[in-house]
Length: 408
Image (cartoon, rainbow, N blue to C red; front, side):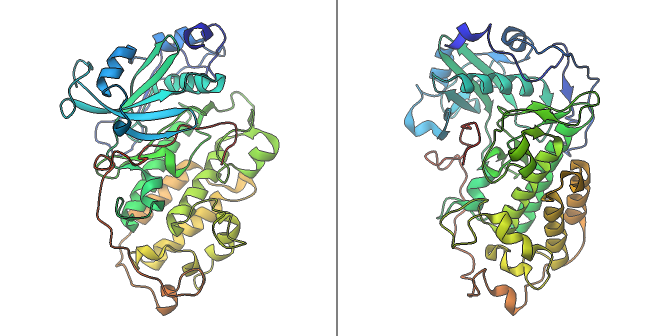
């Protein structure tokens, strides 16, 4: 296990070892300026990936100190392949520092077993070690020592979008309409960068738990363990084992294993629908016929009179109806059964920029819009106190490390 696997693992991305793609223009506006980029047809081995990652190699002892020996009250999130802990390091030297001083980081510690976990750990380094964009989470370093495999990320104080959309209680304030559009646009810019001609990466696991938020609700994509290179030359798709998250994966990918950038577009459509409705993609606790959000909501998306049945009642008319219909129409296009009819991510970015920048006053909806999906009056907004993930260390603020293949 651990380091002894180095001769077996091959990365699924054929980047040249000397190349970095960087689109951070310093102002965080998401405009893409990628550097020159070349690709090799030979997959890189583990040693080459680690040597060319341009990241700090931490010792296990350093990360034990940084996280206070992985104390339970430092846990930010946990799941299939391990746990994520809050830690502190010196901002310049990246050495461990005392809690409350230096720079806050998120340390993902993988379980010490499982081939798939190591493979995804390596893929994460392979991609985030070379890709830079304002809407991708920053990977600071890694640890590979004996059987210990860890990753060190920038800390995202607002946690995941999933928590703000779906958690009940007073820990997370429901996202406003403007915040939802801002987050959708940021995530779209991140995907557009991955899909660009210079990068050609398919994310493959786009979902609300993988969208992390900084203190200003800027969105950053995280968890690149399932990412793959897009097709090269004249190929139309990548053939691969079906992996991802149930409810988000594109139907053609589920049935054939053929992966394209349009597969990410379908997942984006599902997330847009979750943002509009405040409902999870799959929820078996909902009434019969509503378990699958896409199947239930599609008939309502294009009808101005019926769209109120799916809109999140917590938004309380914060949006002009024209904007809500425009986002709903975009979701419908992304969810097209025929992948060729789905827009490109650049088109999605343009549409969301128009929604964000369009002028208009938010109108409180008509009487029938005050009804929820079951024809009952909305209970109105909850009395929620705004609280960040840093304030609630016991909450699962970070995405649960993925459990593949396809999982619920």
